Image (cartoon, rainbow, N blue to C red):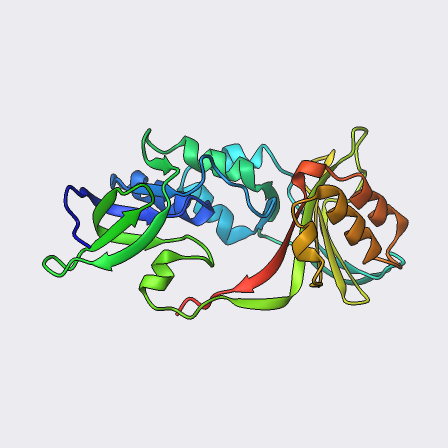
Amino acid sequence: MAAAEAEHRDIVIVGGGICDLATALALHRKGVSSLVLERSDALRATGTAIGIQTNGWRALDQLRVGSKLRQTSLPLKGFRDVSINNTTLKEIPVGLGEARCLRRSVLLEALAGDLPSGTIRFGSRVLAIEMDLQTSYPILWLHGGSVIKAKVVIGCDGVNSEVANFLDLRPPRMSPTCNVRGFTIYPDGHGYPHDFVTINHNRVFLGRIPLDDKSVYWFIARPWTHQDSTISKNSDLIKRSTVESMLGFPAEILEMIENSEPNSLSLTRTRYRAPC
């Protein structure tokens, strides 16, 4: 394919997730411009929330967004693994470090908000990448027919990555497990300690992290079933199947899932793509 009338850019970042925007903002802080190509029409907060520990907060401070993000989340005091009858099996304090859980949407908005206007180009799906034989620069072919020639391409576009395909990396591996994630709001306060709690019972692993005094993020890892591919777009079915898989768990945990925010629920099969 010939790259006639191509747009020329020094640095192009493929993908508009946390790593992509953090990379773009780090370059911006050093006075280096870049272009972020995001295939969606808006920021996507896939994964609901994210736990960030000491090194992550150091990075966010270097990006100059740490202080405002701290205002949106509680500091965690430690990590507790408990049994289904709420007996603590293992406890690890945070110690001198820092650990908090952030809504992914809040983190993405903070990173994007400090980027210069026009850095993120939404609705830009990369179809293929090839090398220019004359300059040895990569050429990006986008949906809609536009073409970009870049000196540097940075790929943060996940498991279905055109950059990874260009580099001839191994395809993603499907895991026998799936992940369910969601938020639950407690209007009168949840009353949970400020710690990261995990429960592992009957091949189902649950994690619960308070975001603030009224909001809780939870996630569940359980075996993948064939019906999961048909219910992953229906929040009511996700909720019902998750509760059914958690027989024996404490009543308060089942109520937490039953009362979760429908638009926060996601069910995805775990996939892994090796970085090299």
